[in-house]
Figure 1 (tube, rainbow, N blue to C red):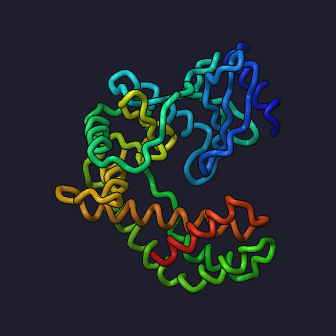
Figure 2: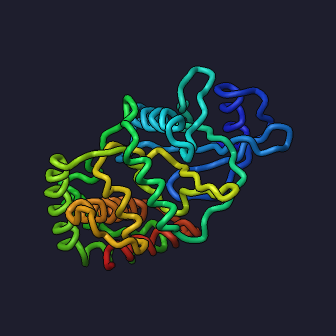
Figure 3: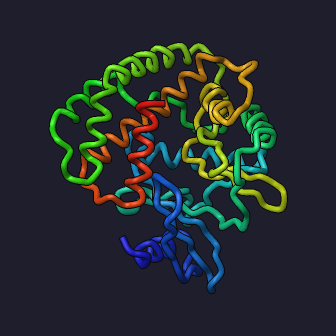
Length: 289
């Protein structure tokens, strides 16, 4: 799609005042634009795709829940409603959304004290109506699916065979991780569940005049609190008082999801872009860490 296509969708579904949309090569996993009014950045535009994490209904529900959380929690940055009252609109096989443009800075590293305070407030908030519930992302068949996918050469890009070889060498480990993941997911059903962000790392934070805001709420779910605390434990937070089994659950979820996505990536045509280089590094890291 072109910038003009995005601009037309914004003008049709949100406001005709927007007069420019410019693609931003930022983030990883979605596409973004800045939408401006009379030369002034006004909205941060996101195109989310659908797959294991979301369909159209669940993405709308996630953003609607985030919108409801803005009132009790002043650090939540949620999308703005369209003229039709929805938070998303269908676009290019996915869904387009707009959040207010924020003039701030991404923290250089994860501030454990500040982020812990935000998560404590979030986890204490009453779950808004319609909040999506966490569910497993990868299927129990993942190890067999990956074995089948890797049975033929991945020769449609420069990293294909390197990725396939690394994956085939770790299929037994992937099977062990998958079995543990689904056993822990069963255990999670008997644990307390709270409102979780899902990815509260520093790249989803913006600091404005000394206050930290949390952005990118497509991952909001009702889930065990360790879904969020895992990110902080990885950043050095002592795990005292946290459920070790639930920390393992969400560490395994991240690992298996990354491996699954990157395997599909390199089995498909790719050309060796900067994103491909990030992806091959991510795959090799998750297979061997």
